[in-house]
Structures are given as structure tokens and as C-alpha cells.
Image (cartoon, rainbow, N blue to C red; front, top):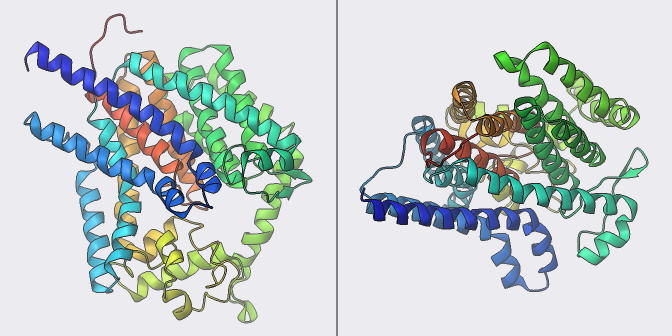
Length: 452
């Protein structure tokens, strides 16, 4: 490629990176903005669906740009299982005669994270651009944490002036913090996301400020009062054991110190969360089938019934938008009546709040055993690729980011048990965006001087 043309290409990539940074900031406020726009239905819909529109148009832009340069999209290693998964999803929907609009809408929800992954994977990247991303979202994280403190101290006032959902949920005698998000679950995830990245930078760069900051953001996780976010944080930290030279006696000590710093001061809160979760879900699982007992907790019912559906609709599932998904909630699926789920709290036609409360039951119910195996395979390939990238990376800043990405992907796997993290904004975009950046840092590096 001629020098002038290459310079224009890099300049265009830089502009698109700035646009992606702005998009990331918007994603964190999207639900709150939409909440404040409910009085204007058209504006509300524009805000609500802006993320999907951006993901699709951004991907098309990347494809057109590659075609104009007479290049193809780079092979990332997930193409075959991804294509097969999407074919399974389409085929199951055709067989089940799912209405086109419902199937197509749910299809977009499944692919939007992958679209953002490919956008990043096709943009040139280096440690200078990476620093810009990190600097911006570091400032944003501090602001969100600070607003979380305000939400904790004066929740009623804070939610009133921000136009947030007014409902305050108390657990263990304290309000579940949500800051600028409309639900504490997202605040807990974001604090865990930031804490794990900061901890990864501590392990690679060895600067103490990162260690203390990781503990600070971990307290944000705890005060969201969400068991899955805490479990995800602990799981993301625990996988550090697989990284050879980084996993030495010194870092083992720091991991133990991190756990103690987070768990000991918050033991009563964490103990309350885990014990209440076990009481709500665990006991019901063990006693199912005794004396005609059936599931009362929506999440348990979704898991158990997804296996029934996968067996009844062998081998490809019941089709997109038919079970455990957002579209099966908006357009109430007949499967909930067929499998006697409509009488369970949170799964009824009048109050379907908990229908899209999980991820894996959705994949199993809608795409069958074949689909869930393929999706799990994609995530395993991501982990395998990240593991290789971390081991071969020479740039410490890049290595730290890729280690952080590995840790947040493990965290997302823990949360996916009780949260649709791979289809729900903003979570899905930050996970797949980080994966795309990690890939680009290894395969689409833009050379700059004086790399650390």
C-alpha cells in the first residue's frame, strides 16, 4: 500500500477509535437516558436501539472498507463455530415456524457482540491508542464509583435528580447501589470489570496504586449487593494461577491479601448474600421431585425446563425468540404455557420480569444441545487465544490488558449462570470489545516508536 494511502487508512482508523470511545461512554448511560425519555416514545426507541444500529452500521463500514482495499476480514479462529451456531439458530427457527420479525430481532441480539468484536479486530491498534481507551474509561469509572457513593448515602434524592428508577432494594440493611445504571446488577458487573483490569495491571506492572484501586472498585462490587458479581470477581481473580511466571509466591500472597481485604471487612454482607441465594435456589434444586414439589424460583424453572425443551425439540431447539430471551418476553412465547411456566412468579404473561434472567437456558432452549455446544466452544476458543496472546506478548502494557481481558471473560462466565451477559448491553459490548482490542493488539499492530 502506498505511504499516503496507508497514512489515510491509519487516520481513518484513529477517527473510528474516537467514535468507539464515545460509543462506550454512551453505552454506560444508555439505559438511564432511555429511562428519562419514556415520555417521548420515538426518542425512547431511538435511544433504546441505538447500540444495535451502531454495531450493525459499524460492521458494515468495516466490511466495505476491507472490500475497497481488496482485503478480506481476518481469520480470528471463531469463524466456523460462529457460522455453524448462526446456521443452527436460523434452521431451528425455520423448523419451528417462528415469525420472521421475532426470529430476526433475536438473531441481532445474539450477534451484536460479535459484530463489535470484528469491528475492533479489523482496526489497527497500538499501546498509544490503548492508553487513550484506558485513560477515558478510568475517569468514567471513578465518576461512576463516586456517584455510587452518593447513591448509597442518599439513594432517594440521587435517583430523583437523575431520573432513575426510584425503587430502592435493601439487602442486609443497606441499599443496593446502582449509581448511573438502572439496576444494581450492572453497577456490580462494571465495578468488577474495572477491578479485574486494574488488578491485572498490578500483577504485570507491579505498581502498588493499581492494587489499592482494585480493592476500592471491589468495594463497589460488594455494595451492589449482588452475589453473582462478587462470585465473578473472585473467579476472575482465581484463574490467575494458570499464568506461569506471573503466578509466583509474591503474587500468590497478593491474591490472598486481595481476598482478605475484600471479604473480611464485608464478611457479614457477603455471607448474607450467599446464604440467601442458597436458601432461594439451592434447597429447591435438591428437593425437586419430592412429594410432587415443583420449582417456584423462576431461574430454577428456566434451567430445568430448558433441558426438557432441548430434548423435545432435538437436536436444534425451539427456535429464536421462543425461550428465556428478550423477544420471548416481549412477544410472550407459547412455550411458557405449554410447559406450565406461566404460573411462576416472574414468568407470567402479566409480569414476565424474570424471563430473560439467565443466558445458558436461553441458548439451550432456542438452539438445542448443538447450539449450546457451539457457543461454549466459541468462548473456549476466545480463552485459548487470549492465553496464547498473554504468554507471547512482549509489551507489558499490552500483556496487562490481555490478562485483564482473560480475567473479565472468566468473570462473565461466572455471571452468565444468572445473567444474560452475552446479549445484554452494556455488558456484551465491553466484553466483546475487549476481546476485539486484544486480538487487534496482537494481529493488527500499528507500529509506533518507544513501546514499553
